Length: 153
Length: 337
Image (cartoon, rainbow over all chains, first blue to last red; front, side):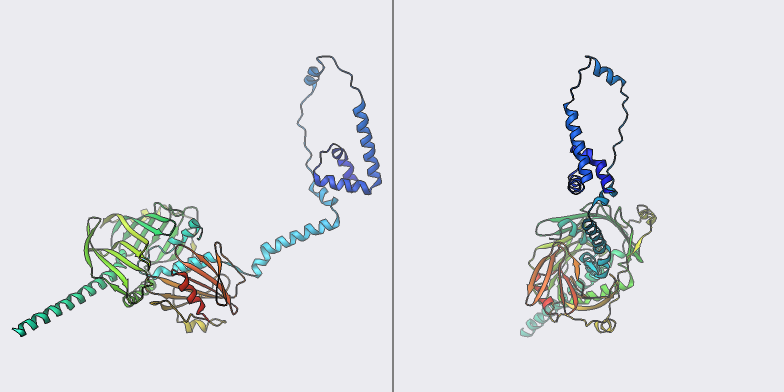
């Protein structure tokens, strides 16, 4: 599976069109896999040769005519498949990502339920509501807004 | 000749004490009537509330409608965060609505329980504060009585000045000063129309029809001993209280998924609240700083309306709040064993 994926991206790798992460994966793979390394060498050679071919110059209006004949079709850009990237990851990497996700879920949803975290704002609102019985207080929660506007300083 | 002189002196002496007694009684009655006057008038006006902090003064303007018996409508016309907020108290429930959020329901400030509590506070005020003889003055072209409340025996207490309408006893202006004599909050009516009846249905039209969120704030105070028998952790109370403060009682809370106790202290004008909860690992508290007093490590947050201290001791978390100096609040916290 990895060889197949590498060979699909080999041409892009040669042209320097892949990102840093994929380049690193392909580079490592090429060091290990002789078959892919041979394919890469062939591709490299072909690329070199293609650059040596002399292109015969066309007639002066060649490019204009060519442009007219070309039908402009929207080119579908192939999205990078995340699953492929996942498959190419080494096992320690997969384990690290999975562990990270588990910890993220644990600390976001489960840990707060196990160890209750209270917000002081609830108590401050309760304090202000306790002033309701003080004689001339008409709107006990009014000063509560000052927490946000003054930053509680 | 000597006897005549003696009788005149005696009569003058009695007259002086009698007038003093009458004016003291008059001030007492004025203040007593003033805090329930808003439930007994038909009134529409614009009220300006100012809260003074060392760095900034916050000003709020609100439209106020009082309709007897016991109906209150407030609408914020100006001010940070609150513009557009509506509060409607119909004597049974108080609705609070801030545009963009749900309508919240609270017990009415004119409910029998809170009315009774407010009357109880009046005795504490009389115990702690001297009421000045009422002086006559004018406010918004209406005759008013001006009364001041000064702390009796303790200098570290705030004091208050009131301008009370002579006809309806409605406070038209109030100024509250901190112990250093600096103005810390005030309100005054900048427009006032008395005897104005308004169809109440009209006032509900700006509220959304979405379901409201009921807030069950507990008001029933219980003696501390009764609360102790209902909880499974020992209740600790402060051995030191600032002068003038007395315990009001406690409230058992069942919020935040655990049992908590709220103990209230008051001097008549201010409230100190102590919360006790079984140990909480973390309390989210922005803008705080650590302080130490003896072996007590606390977090303090200073808001414009009060200071908050949080600390954990003997398996319990304590939260102490009050509008006092930090030294006094730390002294109260340190006395909790």
